[in-house]
Each structure stands twice: as C-alpha cells, then as structure tokens.
Length: 433
Image 1 (cartoon, rainbow, N blue to C red):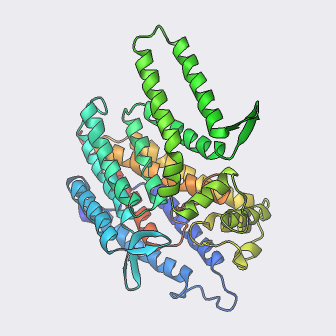
Image 2 (image 1 turned 90 degrees about the vertical axis):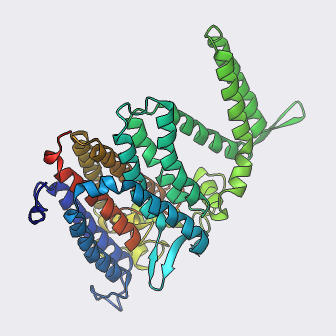
Image 3 (image 1 turned 120 degrees about the vertical axis):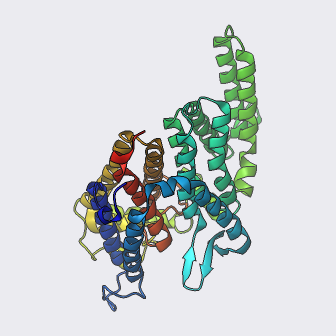
C-alpha cells in the first residue's frame, strides 16, 4: 500500500475533472434558477446557490477523507454500512418528517438528511462485496436469491415511506446483476409488467359496441391477449412442458392486469396518479398535474440552438417552472444555454458513465469492478429519468440530476459514490488478484 502522503497518485484525473466541471456547471445553473435582481450577491449563504456552494466546499472535505482511507475499509465494512442504511430506513419510518407526501427525511434543525441516499451507497458496497466472493457469479439459485435480497430490502422500506422516485433508482442494481450473469428474462418480465400496467390504464378508458353489446377496452384486451396465448401454444404445442409454461404465464399476466387498478389507486399517491395519467395522455391538465412539464418544455424549446444567455431566461427568471433548481434544473440549462448547452450536459454524463464502465472492465479486483458497475448504473438511471421527466418522456417522480440539482444530501451522496470508486481505482496496481 502507498503512504498517505501520496493519496493523489494514480488517481483518474479525467473523472476528477468531469466532477469539477459538472459541479461548477450545476452551481451556475442553480444560481440562474434562483437569481434575484434585487439580491445579486454570488456569495450569500442564505440563498440556494450560496448553500449549494457551501455543500460543494464541504464535499471537498469528504473527498479528501475518502482518499485518505485504506481501500480495504470499504470492503471490510461494506455490510456494516449497509446495515446502518437499513436501520436508518427503519428509523425514518418511525421518526422521520413527511415532505411532499413521503416520510423520507430526518430533520434536525437546519440540517436534513434522506436515508435512501445512504441506502444506495450501502447497497452498492454490500452487493459488490457479496458478489465478489461468488466466483460462480449468478449461476446458482441461492446466490441469485441472496443478491436480490440486498436490493429488495431497501426497496421495500422505501416503498413504505412511500418514495416512488428513490424506489425506482434501485432498479439500477438489476443492471449490475445482469452484467454478472442474471438472466435477461428478468428484464423481459419487467418490460412486460410495465406494458401490461400501461395497457390496463389505457384500456379502461375505451369501449365499443358489438351487436348492441358494449365491450370495454379491458375486455377487448383480455380477449386479444387470450387469442395470442392460444396462438403461441399452438405454435409451440410440440415442445415439452409448453402448456404448463404458457398457462402459468398467461394466468399470472391476467391476474396482474386485473390488479393494476387496485395497485394504481392504493399504492401510488394521488399526485403520482395524476402525473402518470398526464404522461400517458389519459388526461390533459396543463394547469394542474401537467403544469411543471408543460412549462419545462416551453423553457427548453425557447432556448433554441444557443440559448437566451446566462441569467436571460424568461421562464427561469419569472419562476414559471416549479422546483426549477432541483428536479427541473435541466430546463434552466435548456433555456439559457440552448441545444448546445444541453448537448454539453448530456455529453458530460455520457463521458462520465462510459469512463467508469471502461475502467471497471479493466479492474483486477472483482469488488472494485462490481462497485464501478453499481456507480455507473446509478448515475445513468438518475440522468435518464431526470432528463426524461423534464421533456415529458418520464413521469415526474422527484429524481435529482447528479451534481446539478440543488440539495446537500444528494450532492454529497453522488460525491461519495464517485470518489469511493476513484479511490478504489487508484489502488488497482497494488491488487494481486
């Protein structure tokens, strides 16, 4: 091991540089989103951009602390960190503060903390430690169940809050398991469930008449689905066990399809229901559930090719877009920097994620490799969902854009996730296995 006096040796400076550029770009965007002509001070710790600057500064202390740690700490204490995250998720259900319909925050005076951020780190470390000791990968059923258990436990606790956005982020770990050998049928099952969910919501709004008999959209879909299942069975009727497989799949699909209404009405919050209906075009409410996205599209579209200029965005300046410094920070970039600025932002994320994946593939330590996959997957999902919801391609579920969205809890979380990987990567030449 190297001495602590050489903590910056062998660090991936490209990743560090990307982090610095994104943190600066994000801070400028927050400053623009919260800009007030009556109070133009850049250093104002009572303002959102001032607080973000403070969190960036404290983030530097976190970075130095991480770099001083021995890499073996993160392996040896991975299960401990995961256990603390689970306890924090249980604790927030008992003692947390409800914010926007979800009891997901600890609030101590001016300081607030979201345990789901710690849970992402803990799950990434625990999953990496567990899978790095399984040379057979996902070959055995017991290993698959145990690996899924690490992911399902925090998901279940977060759903109880309920925080749909944070829950969705944990699906990033399924991408990691797929890379490690999990069957692609899991993703096919997931896409099928999503398809049936959407179709169930769509079909209940349609009906048609056949010989004076009113046929609902749901009944039409069930009839069509039954015919398709029958056709698949006829095609595969000579295959051994085809009837049992197709029959069980058909029965499970029908039960799930019929239960969508109950799940939709009883699991999701009313504002989530409205946003999903708005996204799917089932309802149109540009002044209500669809207001944020509608105004966000106007802001992004008005930016044109090169944007209106820094601090010149009218949608931004006059606060037309709610939550513009947090969940909708991308529309600030789109309006003030235009297509070019949006392209730069997307390129930064693509280079960051690609670099993490490329370096992960070249790791000798299985723990570091898997952890790199986890970090890349988390960043990708956050980026894809956040940008998607600001342009109307994903439901609005409160997913921050890494290093751009206002908030100390999320900024520190992403900083720690990234720099633990940078630290582990810097030690690769000392790894013998």
